[in-house]
Amino acid sequence: MIHLEDITRENWRQATFVTTDPERKCPLDEEWVSSAAFSIVQSVYEPEWKSRLIMDDDTVIGFAFYGWWEVKKAPLFCRYMIDIDYQGKGYGKRALPVIVDEMMTAYKTDRILLTLEQDNQRAVKLYTGFGFAPTGETFEGEEIYSFKR
Image (cartoon, rainbow, N blue to C red; front, side, top):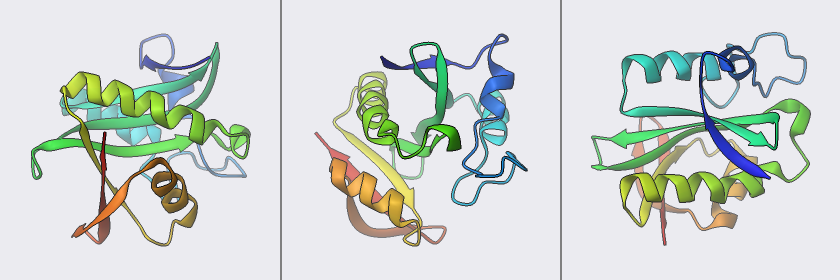
């Protein structure tokens, strides 16, 4: 069953090596998203951000990062990756509602934002298929999308 877990003393090493790199050469340099390692450090020093492991039972399959976006006064789903070993198996679609539900509960909201590079067509398809829609705004060169339940 897909669920989220906190990053802890016991699993932080597994979390830092979640990567989208097919060759697993450098999990600190992702193509479309900041690395899990960078995100974990950020969440330690900026506690408004949450690093979460995406699990399938006892198997680490991905990583999510979200928090409060002060600029827009709304929760921001900031980083999301399914490890390269588990891509193409439907985990992205299955884990997304789990993350969205957790965020909506944590922030007591019915609206979540994310930013997205338009060249990342797999992500655009995933998020729009779930119900995220472009707002017409951009932030640091990325388009802002909104999901409302």
